[in-house]
Length: 417
Image (cartoon, rainbow, N blue to C red; front, side, top):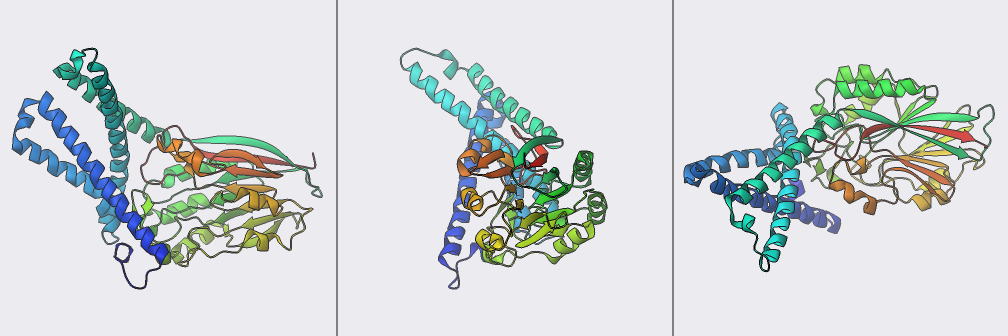
């Protein structure tokens, strides 16, 4: 298990990464212990037979089994068992996050009430009724968020945008682009959702279809029906073709709860991913520039900025990719992460098409994303460049969406208007 062992051949970046992995593991153990302690404390108070050590032991064993699926699904050798445990671990993580969040909210509320209680007596704090109310709030809120998040994640919405690019394109007044990203095929996403996505794309009558990375959820063997998926995705219709770039999850690496615990130097692309996309009829762009509509429009596709698929993060700079282009023609850029928007705009890119952020995917992570990215979701104009970031179709980690949508984007680009 090279990703958690120190060695003389590790660089400073890898050492920092490993320390971060251990820190996250420590936080998970700490929070898990906190939740278990609060559960036992509450059950002992409201259900008398939970005061017996045997009942507490049964609860502890069941809890450890659930909590361990998150770790074992990632660390066991790749097999049908590890895939199953990984799927269970994803569900567990979603439930766990909301239990922790709701317990913390209730504990903070109780703490505030205790401070008030020093001046004004609040009998509810020391009564059995108060314990019942606190527990019911935690259970009801957790069940609501998890159930809603799972159901909501199964549907796909369409977001439509219209923009103007002040450049002439001979014989073309506009182009309709379908942007999707973050399919995360494997643990959470399969044939049913891909069929839904393809139908929505085809309903658009798009001229161009682009997929902005994270087609896979790292483990190709997690696909339960590769041939069925290929058959569905071959049904995507587009006048100018379907183009794809890879994302940070389109590599073989170890995931826990949707998050990588593999150093970049060990992250390599599974060759079956290339074969899969070729069979789908998609063209993969890896630091490539292609021309559309008889050379009237440029489309640039970049490697991922974190994991290029060869154990590095090496890729061509946007300066080099745009250096020899005719800037009087529209330039579209497809890449996974919406980084360095100002630098990309300065290179003459007219439209930047990205994914990666999932718009936070579920509350409370939705609070963090706006601080992490200049454009974390939707549309933003930077200089003369139009930036689009889709929330994605699929999911990483917990199979749920709360306060975000799985989506496809329809972008109508009008020229010289």
